[in-house]
Image (cartoon, rainbow, N blue to C red):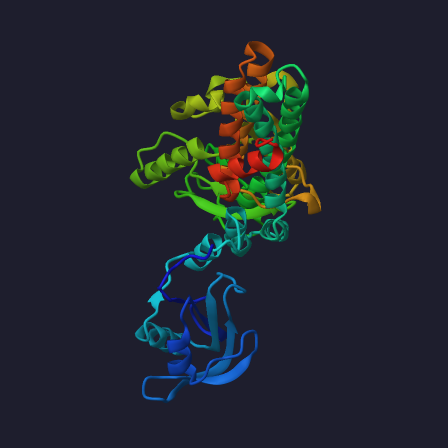
Length: 455
């Protein structure tokens, strides 16, 4: 059902600044006043007109392409007008002010896509994919967003919902209409259905988790004592001279960030100040920021200068103030400067944490380090099979999984049909939040269409 809104919204939909082309888009249920005042005629839907855009005094603001899409065959499901002119900021500002002067209002962030969702042109996953495609940080992420925008993720969720609703209909009909004489607790159909759903959910959750990694990546903090080679590692991983590298301890005094991709997975690398006790106020501030980043990190690479004597099992491997690092489950020791003649290697049993040997100067070991980070993140490059996803999708699928597991437990232990039905209801609601399609009316329609209740 189309949204009943009298507002006509307008916005510049190309990036601000100078460009060859700039586009102002309008969307609403009544665009005729804009046609008459701006163009002097009603444009033909889906036809490109080359036309001046008129100011209030009849003089042209600019001349360009006019595209008109009539409802409901448009992006938003409403009438949509696009004015494509020269992309100078002054021209675009004049054009936008003109349509607002004629009665349009400035669109809120995301309002065109919001109207597309409310008018049934896209579901929630597709709306989110629009933003993901714009923000894609790699070719794989862009391809994944396109797949979600085309509805591949939605179809997987819809198929699961159909199986879930069919099973819930079967259970609730047997409870509400006992004359049907369906012994759903022992006939094996419910157990088989629940186990099938559990398997399908696990497969989809695995894909969604990979999709979320493809979109979000992980944050990796490079930590360690001064002069361990943290800034050199940042530069080596990013391929840029982002950080200043010197032999002076405490050179890095603030947090430095770079982003790379590993097989399409974004890696947010954060270089931090060397961890040590210091009286220098500025350096201490940098160390405090470093400690904050360490607490928030998905993975911590603790660099050790392997050209000097070290013992990974010794308490003093970590700075005094950060002894808690020894308990961090997301920590990896990175032995740097292994190209030094003084490096004598390490014993495998010396640390409960993973150990990677590298030389940031020569690049030795960097491939193994990247593979290790991919493994820590749980990322598997599935190529064409991945689609973009978000953390809320993972949460919804995990909660749906929990409801299905609880329903199976109720079936096998208590045999409580009403509780099974309630678990299935909760599972349907959680799964429906992914696409935004859930409605209690859906179940009613399925019940009446699936069973001969009026016989």
